[in-house]
Image (cartoon, rainbow, N blue to C red; front, side, top):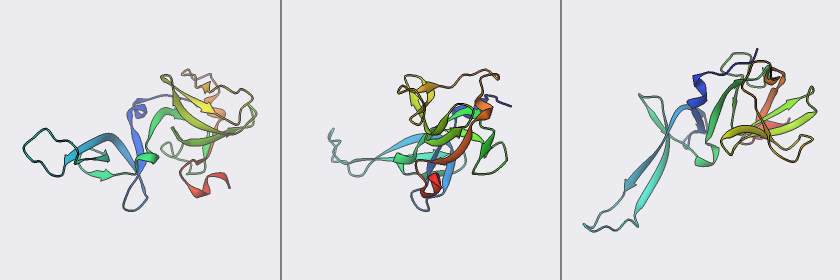
Length: 149
């Protein structure tokens, strides 16, 4: 079963301190370390944070990805609905569509699949339940070493 829901507004990223995945809302937090009374913005630091409304965790910005709001049929992460949620940066495969290992990307306002497909252009996800999204399997992420077992 394929569906799209409000989880598409969520982001995930790996924590800076532990490398564990955090899921929530993305907020770039700007800090000015020193201020000399002038409009000198040379000492500004941006910390990239995922927050759930109660806590916030600093993340590795290169691991930031948005949820597509769509679910795969299978996932290496597990069988629950949360485990099968497709994220930007996931690696997906499908025997039905001759897809060996494509990367989920966000391009020109849509999520799609890049690489591993017969087409050199990114392939867009369709939003309707009959599109075949349910035939996709999440086999890893571009951020994890175990991605292409």
